[in-house]
Amino acid sequence: MEEFRCDRGGEHCADGSDEFACVCPEQWDLWKCTDGLDCINVGYVCNQEYDDCQDKSDEENCDAWECPEEMWQCQDRQCIPKDLVCDGSAYCKDGSDEIDCHLWNCTQGRWRCVVDDKCISTTSVCSGGSSCSDGSDEMNCADWNCAEGWWKCVADQKCIAKTRLCTGLSLCSDGSDQMNCKGSSCKTKGWKCADDNQCVPLVGLCDGTPDCIDKSDEVNCTEVSCSRHRSKCADYLQCISDSYFCDGIVDCIDQSDEENCAEKKCLWYEWKCTKGEKCIWTETVCNGVADCRDESDEVNCEDWNCMEGMQKCADGKKCFPSWDICDGQSVCDDGSDEIGCEEGECSALHWKCADGQQCVEDYDVCNWDIDCDDGSDEMNCAEWNCTVGMEKCADGIQCYPFMFMKCDGSLDCADFSDEWDCPCPWGEWKCADGKQCISEEEQCDHSINCRDGSDEEGTMFHTHFPFLYF
Image 1 (cartoon, rainbow, N blue to C red):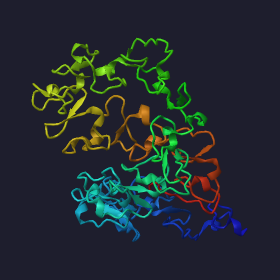
Image 2 (cartoon, rainbow, N blue to C red):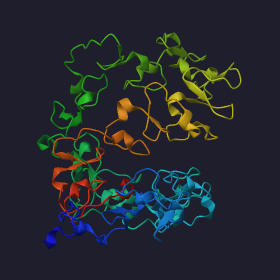
Image 3 (cartoon, one colour):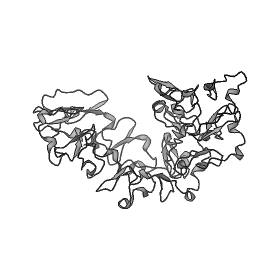
Image 4 (cartoon, rainbow, N blue to C red):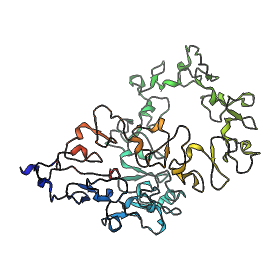
């Protein structure tokens, strides 16, 4: 029957001729295996890692292999999308896509950093957070035209997505993204002021401080229900955070949040703030960061005895972990943790950079993120044994904290192996490679969702796709 012709669902003819001379679908960049039985994405050809064709023809004659015009060819002959060239992360196994970037012309929709020649998305330019090491993407923003679908704040000239306009949560320092909102619903986390022009945060409704220019967010508060994790003061006119009740600081205008407070006992490893009933971890007392709202955990630190494993700075104002001594990065305001150190020596649980001057923590070595100024913490990683609590990705190069990041739904390994062999949540289906879960509804829906194409096995859509293109 014609319906079984080239369906890649198995041979229905005894001689297999129903799967001979099949044409690959034209809507994707596909490459036909020599035996004609399968089509794979060009990103799998000569990638030196998987034999994706049953006859292994995708790893043959690679010296003569040429990528399609819209792709970029690594020195080892692998093909990657041009948008990934000189983006600051190596996708070629030989790293050739991050070499000689000063000679590379960024593709459309990308922008070149001034110093490091990295190509970043135009949506990252003037976004309020620098993606370039030299910060050049956040300079001269007054003259920058935001990318399509983005909007420029009036005062700070930052570009934000138009989808963030009139949400009630301002990303612009001047709140200009929450003005001129006539006709907008202010979405789920915003509230429309009475003037029908301004959106303010829903959590600010009836909090005692006007956010609307017309102050309508503080009117008729007895009839307003507080948002999640907030409760009414005794006068029913004001909403405050649940954590503010009995914390030693008056937030309600009627002071009811600090009335009838039962004394709370802290656990053995906790310390009670001077005002209120809040308990904090004892090890955070006198660490230079106030955890109590009254900042009592950072007062009289000269008389505080640091916890075991902690050291006190010479000025007596801060406690810090002992392993930060002589690590090349001062944590004490007076610099005493870096005084009297033998030159080039690192403290325990630290690693010396190749320059002999800088120390980084053990877990920062070979984690796919450069911490040493000379980049030596990301060199020779195949020979590096990951520190305690870290584990090698499948590539044998990168280390990651497997206890926290294995099967957490976020890709942390460059080869994605931290999300391999993970149980699928309820309502999802595991692809044949055991490395990906998709919704059960996406199986056999005539659209490739699994990287290995197994969700469409038995249909004419069955093929292979590398994760790179999703």
